[in-house]
Structures are given as C-alpha cells and as structure tokens.
Length: 81
Image (cartoon, helix red, strand yellow):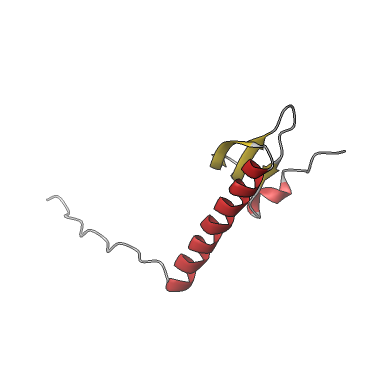
C-alpha cells in the first residue's frame, strides 16, 4: 500500500523577523536612491551568488562599488584606492 503524506503547515515568520526584513529593504532602497543621486546607475538589487547575496550593484563610469550583506563580507574585499 502507498503511504499518504500529510502536507506540512506553512511556516510563519515571527513579527521581529518581518520587521527586520522590511527595515533591510527600506535601507537598500534609500542607499540605491543616494547612489542614483550621486550619478551611479543601479545594475542589480539583491543579487544572489553561491557565496551569499549582494544587496546593490551600482556603476559610475569605470568604477563598480557594491553594497554587501553581512554574510558576503567574508569573501568580498573593498576596492583599493
């Protein structure tokens, strides 16, 4: 006989986690607006890689600065001057 599986209940995020997510999205939007005001073009937001997530990828002329999440800090280094 085949076993019937009971579907699991969907996970519900805690209010603290939802608030933290909203704060992060708001901060990313403000950072993108700031960069755009300074003449940068936003190439990507919340770009996922196998190593983590890059919040904002922006470009101005030949420079490509990026904002990074805390997880991604271990493998990315800031550009040298």
